[in-house]
Length: 387
Image (cartoon, rainbow, N blue to C red; front, side, top):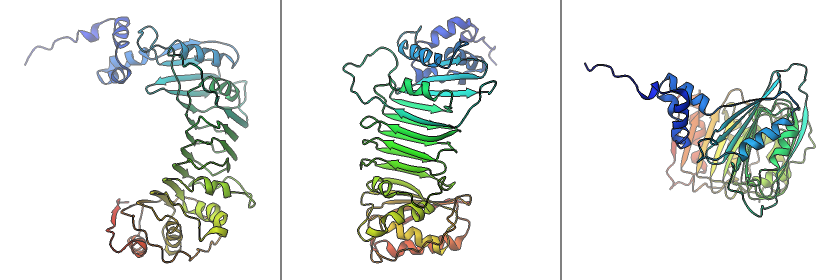
């Protein structure tokens, strides 16, 4: 066996290693933790800027703005991508500048003398077209906000107004957020909201929105009229968070009408969408829908009928994914299924994927029902995962 040779690179001083790593492209540099235990520690220090400041919450805006404005990927002294700002003993903020103009901001709150409270949030995105885009600094196009609270939401709002190129927004784990308004008439293209269990009202003013992803209990939703949405995800297995039978959800049905991809729970179709289109049932269709992800808590004959009823509104459907999750909310009301569109034939449906089915009988009943509405000349590929 050859004599073990010392790893010369690992023996270099920390300062020199940090200097070397600073010249690497981010996608290559991020792999350094896989080299060894020591390099994992080096990487953590390479992307970490320790910045402590005992002061008001407003210091967050100044510190983060300075951090992103001074960023220069090609300057080793300015290409650090992570800032940890300790505001006081109870609050610190982590900011990460990721590739492809993505910025992550996470807020950590440990309590102390300050108390988190429920809050309403109006988030405006500057729709004015900048006369000149400054090439210096980090240009934020996608913003991911994690755990914004009642103490920090106003500071975040003021910061967002400075991001003139922002077109994608993700908001998650705002535990005490009760009402949210997103105001971006012409800029915002992609919006994702998840993990906000107290949210009861959501208003979206964004006429160019193309994709919308919502996960959690379904709040009252008001989306100002537009028909550009191509992908809509309503992962609302926890059921509704509202208790208002007079809810006007007609505009929501119109908003998702032109979607090409849609994720939906059965209960939402029965309680929200179907009542809103009952007067136009014979004419209302999801003409452009090509992919449907359907979530239910089981699949008996009544639930199969509900699915078939929805599919008959989707003449262009090509791919169908059905997930059975026993924890999914189910309406207590008996909902009658409309028997119209009995002669509708789905000529483009090619693939059906089934997940979570525990009963072979339910699975076979569903496949038989699908075959009844698929063109006789169209082969149907059915894929099933083992539960």
